[in-house]
Length: 270
Image (cartoon, rainbow, N blue to C red; front, side, top):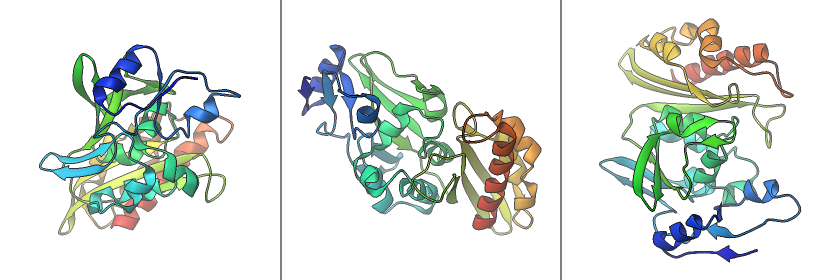
């Protein structure tokens, strides 16, 4: 196997142009490789700007090779609490130490823990190639199970989070408390002013082919803080998700679970 660890973006893109596979944390790449990982492989962890979290007028920039441990331990605003809670539940501690934000997104699993919190934060992804740079909303980047909008020779450089207000929470349901693929998971972000919820962002993962925002539920949550959890309509949740059946749960169970998790999330924030 040919292994490349470029020190510049130009070198990394040159390697990708030759058909190399991308390596970040390897927590998805290695298990999916079977008995032997075929090359060539381009390790992106030495490329400047691909690791670390920076803050500025445009919001937060999380390098695509930033680990979940780094996200969990960073000093982030309250709106990012759901993202940090999810970071602490991405596999075991060893996975969190190696697995990366960009890898989690590019693997495009319907049950990727990082997706609902990032959707609730209105995140975008920064993609680079030899043709330049482009930015896509996360909802437009994820096309389906194991499918993304990445083009040949293109790589994710960062996740971009605009300045967002409020507080957030992440809740996950699985067959056990830890080290489990989700049956359903939700992220809720609320912006509260006095007795009113003035903005709501909710996203649900592991229930559809891709994680989804639920605009109808968000609209219903705007209004008085009192009784907000009761405004989570299970019918609206199910309609927004078109939930799936698989070996972990039925579609009907997922719809009910997602509605209950959303209700609990709203309660936790109000």
